[in-house]
Length: 236
Image (tube, rainbow, N blue to C red):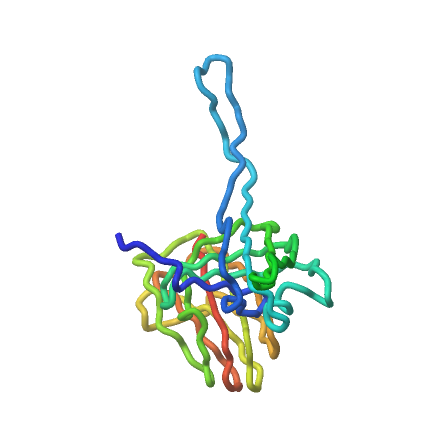
């Protein structure tokens, strides 16, 4: 199998692309608590799976506009959920990681006159573990008007629902509605989930239950111009 470099990795937080300020990502992953259930007739521990958890940490070069705005809310740490997305490649269908999280810190440091000012932030899962899905955009895409992206082929349908993540970075005008569609044959499409229409920088997380057909794609509808956004879908 082909190896993957970090050259095409991005990080999006709450409708902001902070990839141009980030210099590393840490702890992007999924953990689960394995509880010991060893009876006296065993020679080694036995375990059952308990609660799951996950986190994403990012180190950035301090920048007073987009990065600073993404990691603060009203000049303090945000208390609401943060939707975080980490695309791992530059093409539709490449892997991506999504996380609904609470932000636990935003720390700024300066290592002396020979070092730039840097900052770090960590995001800890809140109710959902990190979800490993596929990108329905090529990093981010711009729809100048209503359009559909190329589809992603899963080779077969799945039956355990899934979740969609969207990051809306900018919009020139109008009110677009973005939806994830699915298809059994890559030609007849139906709505799978619909994100709430937005006119500003935003991010959303939506879940869906039941069957997800073999093919999925992202589609924008409505009257608008130049929506720049990113979308990821996770199959359960």
